[in-house]
Image (cartoon, rainbow, N blue to C red):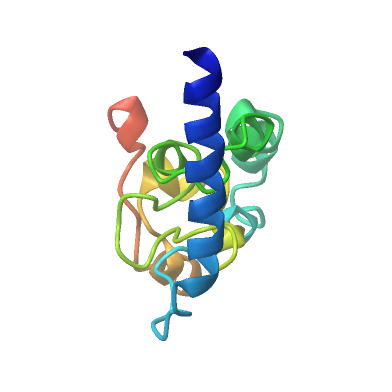
Length: 128
């Protein structure tokens, strides 16, 4: 039984990886700036994130052959549940891992105009 489940899992993963190439490239810009855009102004927070498990969340999926598993990915990437967020590792690899915006909301507008536009407070920490 375990062997059958493992075979099905491997077949599903292979299928999803092939399907990733078929997803069209987005014509709309992302609403996510990415963690590197946060580093200049939020240096200390960026350093803490960079050394956290969140900065390497996608590695867990690589080890388990789930890199294209749509059931697992949303929790290991940034914007996995929203339009114009993470699509797959072929189309939006820059949004891999649980980056700042996974908790603080999409921030491309904030990164372009930080004095006037502020992202939501830390959604995962209750506004901290």
